Every structure is written in structure tokens, then in C-alpha cells.
Length: 289
Image 1 (cartoon, rainbow, N blue to C red):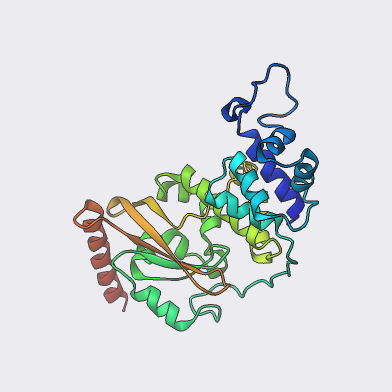
Image 2: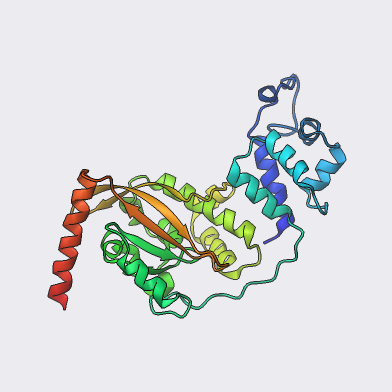
């Protein structure tokens, strides 16, 4: 991806969402050529020259100091994820293209056997292992039951982002599908900012941009987020809606792999439903076996 273009559009989008009067500047008395803050207004509030900010937004600066980035981020009211994304986009370190990983598979060499065993045995709730492009590499029994509609797909299509945007079934599985779509888009932009030359990520973004109008719309909003915890409401045909909390366990290496671990509040209806599904899955496995 073109880092300069990404940086320019990202900063423009953050300027556009603010109104001058929110930051103590005179309101738009006359016609304004751009929505939100002008470049010179950002520069003024950040304590830098207008020319320097223009070069920063256009990606024509080198060795930008942390203090300047912090000042710009403060003016544009960026959250922690947006600040991290800004730093990724202005990085001057040379980027090497990342070779595409092998086709994801539960038995693939890209996943350590010990990690696969851990995922299979982990917790009383569903969990699965994702690579950096949201391919599902391993899962436990409850995840196979609850996320069956995506896990049952062939390995090359067992991808959570493709499921969200390219499979109509996802809108029934995820009760809050619009929010899931926004978070998925924001996650992909965050990670393409970190790995702009990673073909696994850029090919996925390109495919979704071609095939999903909704993804194109959300991508144009410059959403950025790297949520490591939260909640999801999942609809299952046997037990109804499951209210699940999730935590993300990231690998300490540079693989980009992470484990999504879901759980329910003890004693809740969802907790009871998970027990029912676990028992049902065990019975089904015995029958098949």
C-alpha cells in the first residue's frame, strides 16, 4: 500500500471530523473549502509551521519527532489506536515485502503443534487462533459449534473477514453485524498500517474492496482500532443468542497470530447455554466416532 496516500487520507479524515469552534477557533463565518479544520489551523494548535504540517500530511518529512506527532494527535483528538496508526504511517524504516503464508490449515506448518493443542484444550468457552489476516488456523470444540458456518469452510476460505463481508449468513450469526463489520474494517486498516507490504493483508483488503460495497464504504471512513477485548452477541440455532465476552492473547513473536478466547458470566443464561452446546457437541462426536 502507498504509505503517503494512506497518511494523507488518514490525517484529512481526522481534520474533517472536528469543528473549529470545538477547539476554541473562530467558527466558519464564511465559506470553507474543506470540512473540519484547515491544515494551517492544525499547525497553529500543534505549535508547528504550516509548511511543516503540509509536508507531514503529504509524507514528505523524515525523522518526525515524537513530540510533534503527539502534538498533532492531541489537536486531532486521536485515541491510542489512532496514535499508533499515525506512527506506523510516518515510519521511515524501510519495509520489506512479506511473502504470503502457506494456506492456513489446522495441520499447517505455520502453527506450532503445542499452540494448536493449547487452543483445543483451552477454557470452558469457544476460542480460536487467527493469523494476521484473520484466517482461522485452529479452534476448540465449542468454537467449531458456535462458529460452524465459517469453520466448516475449506481452509482457503476459513477467514473471519471474508465471512463477515462476503457471506450473508454472517448477518444472522452476528446479532450486531454492523458493529462487527466496523471493528473488522478498523482492525484490518490498523494492521495494514503496520505491515504495508504484507501481501497476505493487502490481497485480502483488495478482494474485499472489489467484492463488498459495505467494506468499501467503511474502508473509506479511515476507521482504526485494535480491540483486544470486548463483547459479541452470537446467534446459534440451538440455544438462541449468546452474550460472550472476549479477550485476545497475542503471540510475542512477529507472526501476528492471536488467540481469541470467549467466555460467559458465571451462572448466566449464556453460561448455561455453553454447557448445553458442549454436551451436545460431545454426544455428536461420540455418534460420529
